[in-house]
Amino acid sequence: MTHIILLIIVIIISGCGSDGSSRIDQKNVLVIGDSVCVGTEDNHSWPDRLQDIASYNVSSVCYGGITLAKYDVQSVLSDYASSTSTVVLALGINDIYQGYSVESIMTKYDEAIHTIMAEGLTPICFLYAENGYQTSELNLAIEYKCASYGLSRIKSSTNISDYIHLTDSGRQETANNAMKGIN
Image (cartoon, rainbow, N blue to C red; front, side, top):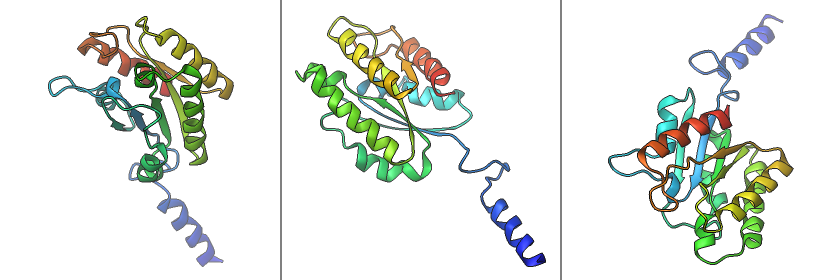
């Protein structure tokens, strides 16, 4: 009986982080996205800034110019799923610029949400700054899709420099918005 009790204690302790918290309960965020999530050499990205203010780990796999149609969500998740609990889906604006319809973008968005949830992870949706270039229509579709799943949303700052990319203060504001949307 003593051996069984010791075994149970060892199992419980081995499931804890060095601070005593459960590894499963620790939040680790992965941001998958486009250039809106990429910083410059002098100005860190909003995911980098989120890492600076968050009590959890933040990773990002973001590429300038990438479309949701070409982003391999499953491949990225296969590399990060074991160390991630939450995934911010910040993709879609480049699809608009490439001429994809909002309907086709939302089909891919839905597939991405399902892929994230199939890994047992929590998706969070990213809404772009309103810039007048079909962003309103895309954001409305993302808002509707994510509300239908009961998912949280993160709003980009409206401090943009070229119709889409965040200014330095915009990156900080978006990190602050992300902190609220993730918690």
